[in-house]
Length: 562
Image 1 (cartoon, rainbow, N blue to C red):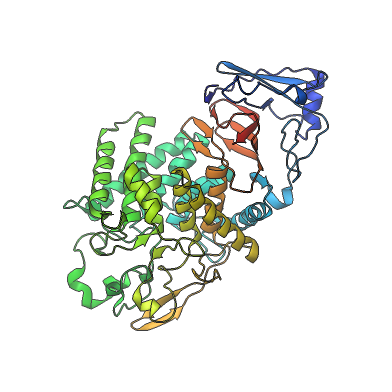
Image 2: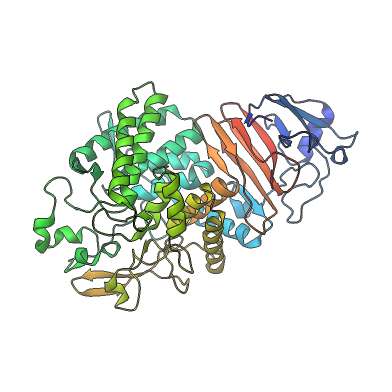
């Protein structure tokens, strides 16, 4: 069977079939629904459809997909699976609990912890949608806040949340949220917010465009990314080494940086280094002045150039220059950050060889590392008992106090998620499962996703950070943190379900963690296609499927994991 499933949906519209579809719980006005059970690509070892599952009296939907014609039954009375989420005869996803899922994408599997953690994530995410008006929005509309303790979306949070699955859950609110962190002068857009990693907005925007095919928003995004890159090239780019200055993606606190940055820091923000008169000779005279160069942030610039080129191509503009800049960024990152002796990438170029969870995740997810470097990073990355720490090891000034820094040594779940995805997509499934189950267990234990956890105990823990010169204090861990919840969701959508979303297509390559034998997802919409998917272990169906998302329809799909 070819991997490209162009869904030419040939539906036998008999009265019996139509009544059967309605009996399965679908509204009478729903567009044509096709049930698809793809076969294993090797027809010699696996027949198209086992005869035991298709009775002569059952209606059959026939679908032509490339060279393969697949038949699958649709039964009027279902035989529920063990967890009640799908029918074991026709593989229809059965009705979900609207109270738990709030009309968002439904997920269930035969591991109660993973299923319950997803419900917790949905509750946290939906609870953080509030009316908000800022940026280029002209009125208050529903937007996704950074968490229950925040009254704004924050630029990096908005981008990460949309990228990590919220674009699929609620495209309209995703668009509102991304627009709320832009600024406009006349017809020109720019990305607003904390400057150093604002360019990460491009990643969330591009994911939303691929999910929605919204070309009007694509034009806005291309303009905002182009203008923002020009600004940061003027203000933060260092032509000497080809890198951008600025803190790490998550790192707005002084606790995320080596001890010399925090000496006599007048406030807890990373800008406290610049505010200290003693550091006047270390401040860069252009841009914002902070001198560090972080792995995660420079990875985002690389990916932004790649996305700029893709949007340029989408809109009929030249791609040559952004692609050249992307390649130059990749080379600069590998030259400045790769540490051959340690077999991994440094956190801060030239000054800190600690490991940064998000930076390592990005360098693998974006394809900056080559095959050899990837293998070494997977081999040499250290992980604590409660997951990968955001920066490791912790800085001495916090260890001397018997604790861990707010941005060093502790566990941030969104960092876990990026690392877990990098592991999964590079064949290290154990690393993915390890982080996923830790995240799920804590969410179920606490009834919510918190912002930060202790690396030794797994307890909710905000970490130590300066309040001023030689004034340390224990900070709180924010409640119902959105990017912690969407981080977990990303592990369901992009790794367990294996959704790879392209500009006009989606491919499903599912993977079931050890001990999980079945999973169901419904209401998963990409472009004009909506999918209800059942994944089972060891059944005689295809292990991958690709669809053209410009075609309109609803597909019921059964995939297998060997």
